[in-house]
Image 1 (tube, one colour):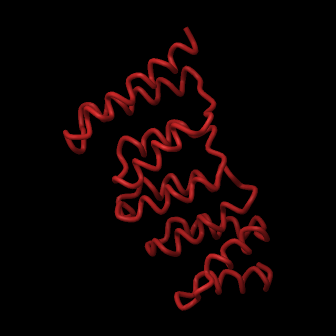
Image 2 (image 1 turned 30 degrees about the vertical axis):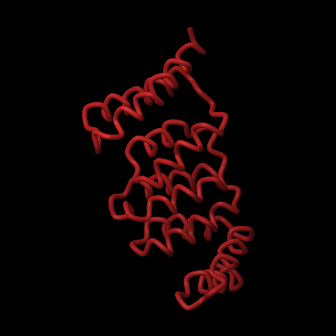
Length: 173
């Protein structure tokens, strides 16, 4: 890896660095294939702050799908449950139009902040929807119905999800 990128990694990952976001953004804009691979590995780091900075850097790269695969994996990882909201928030920097099911899953199973952010994305983003997308969403919905994390939110989610799924199905009938 070239020296400039290595220095940016060091600055971004330095816990004493007050400008870590600046270095993450700069790194993302200059990242090559090797830097991208290293950033994707960092997304899975046990230190959620390093993982978040890697996500931020990736948001500035052209590798949208690869980055999103890693970020959604981090969001679903139990070790990140307390920081899920931060990872979901960084998603606003990406093109999510192909990721309805991933966002829908976060809405259903995410912590409070993550779920609310996902709901905003569901309301605001124009997703690419196919019959397969609907089937996958229904599968997650049925799983949620049989395993709600808290009974109180079940009725609220029912009132939001069922009309959404119905509307999507009508697109293909």
